[in-house]
Length: 259
Ligand SMILES: Nc1ncnc2c1ncn2[C@@H]1O[C@H](COP(=O)(O)OP(=O)(O)OP(=O)(O)O)[C@@H](O)[C@H]1O
Image (cartoon, rainbow, N blue to C red; front, side, top):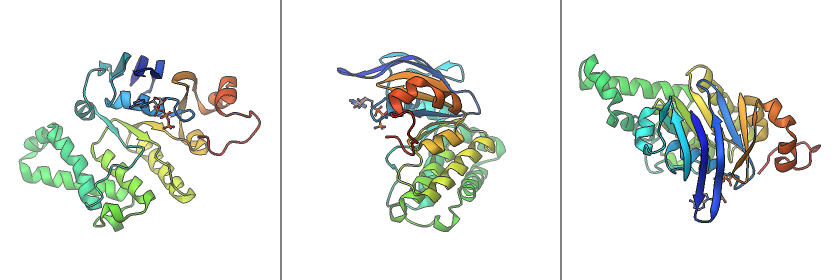
């Protein structure tokens, strides 16, 4: 996925100015930066929720700048949200199924199911995939639970399950660790690594927890006031003078969480 000189304005507010970066297939790429730096705006430009005022978004070499969210999802761009977007009154299983139905509607699986031999096969395939996701995220025990009754950490995990159900090539994770305790964060970090390594998903993530970002990202881009001030491997970004001054504040102070 590539962003080419993307700018985004909301009236007089410049959320993004001339931001270019590329996420290579197979990597975990994180966007960091202080509050209001433009991270969510950038991810929204990639998902199709916002249309850049200037610049282009390319996915798989195709210009998707003017492509809507559903079509982008069908092309293989999936996402989770900063604030949970689950259906609280529905079960975990049904919430994940919603993700699959979206995929069916897009016609990707329908064609395959027809080829395999009809609706029954389609349903079986559908369920098999959902079960695989439930196993992977270790949420078997809550499959029948109503989503709204779960702890925050578990709800975040179910939200991830629903996003995976779309089988995206690129998954956009908006603060996947927010509000989690240490153990939940460790679990989530492991799931993200496995998604990347075992499921082959490319990950574009916004995350405030610097420990996690530095641990699991292959590359990082730093935004400040809507501009890219650095990008590179965690080592390169940590050593960058601009980043240390503009973002991390006191250069010598250890930073646990930057917000
Ligand atoms: N829908 C919108 N309408 C108007 N201004 C917006 C909108 N979305 C974002 N902004 C503004 O754009 C700028 C960048 O916001 P954005 O949410 O992208 O930053 P962020 O880095 O994701 O911040 P945070 O870490 O707080 O989530 C901010 O000044 C914000 O107020």
